[in-house]
Length: 188
Image (tube, rainbow, N blue to C red; front, top):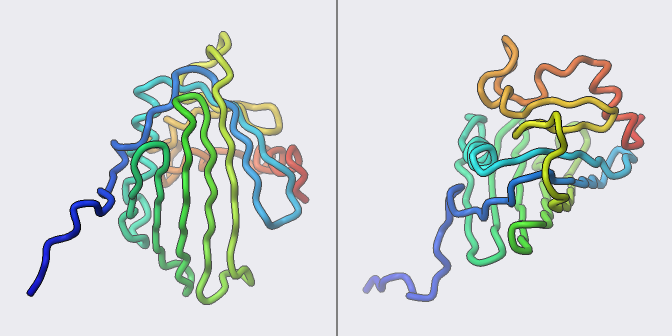
């Protein structure tokens, strides 16, 4: 006979179930295990509306070559699993996000490519973010200070951004800005 799922099975979560980050200025440091790059440090101004929209956008299925995100976890931890299909490879991504209240979090993300994609079998990235206080004068919610000394607004990309931007917040960066980002965190 079929029995119902155990009462203690973990509930599934959605983008709406992620803890909101505290409004103000956030500093994020990203480290990747490839390319010989050092940490990439960015600062971003957030409010509740911007944070909510970013989370919904990130968990929506902008990439039709990916399965819907499988989100689980309760309390301070969220686990996200996504499977995509790109360029003849199947990247499988597993991310664990651990929140310490509304003022900092740590993310550990592992992606495996089967078969390897551009010679890469996988990628490992960590991200640490912390609340720094109020946004400085001149920064509005969604503004992100990039390595290389310039600011973009991620909301522009989520709302369609530049013509032909494909919805990426980085689609309207110039090649010089992309080079500045790479140079600022040790890329070649």
